[in-house]
Image (cartoon, rainbow, N blue to C red; front, side, top):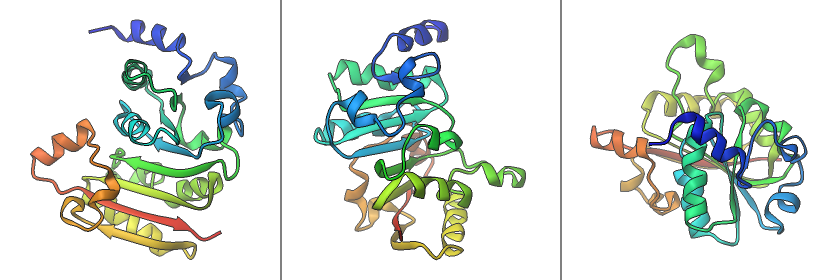
Length: 219
């Protein structure tokens, strides 16, 4: 297995990874299609993408769309970027950044769809503001999503899922909300595209059902 330092060196030389130190990293906002993908296809982002199973999986399924996996961990991004290289996918890229800095990298209405897949549930009360489905983050996502763009959440964690539903109840700008506490036994199962992350497989083996919701913001 490659060491972290070796992985960092590899991604520093890859065109499908944007990270600090690369010139494009500071100039990509509003320019993803022009400078990274060289097309006008819609952009989907995966927040806290980890190894990027969803980003790469969706890029394979939808060659006429662009995908960006976002994570702060370079060694995780190395895995997804490696899969993309091996599969010769030029419609997926990875951004090494904190989610709260999203506005630094995406312009208003630049994103067509957001996936939040198995985020850290951050169960401690002192970490409520750091949960990625907290209303302060939802406000951030609304800024970069196109009108009627979709937000999707997939998680095994019941407490986080219920917390998210409570956050949505407090808002007056949510429409077309669909919810299931067991996606693979629901009519929404096709929406998760048959893609499973390492965490999903791990928790499913423990008997956890997979929760899923999606909605649109009212402009």
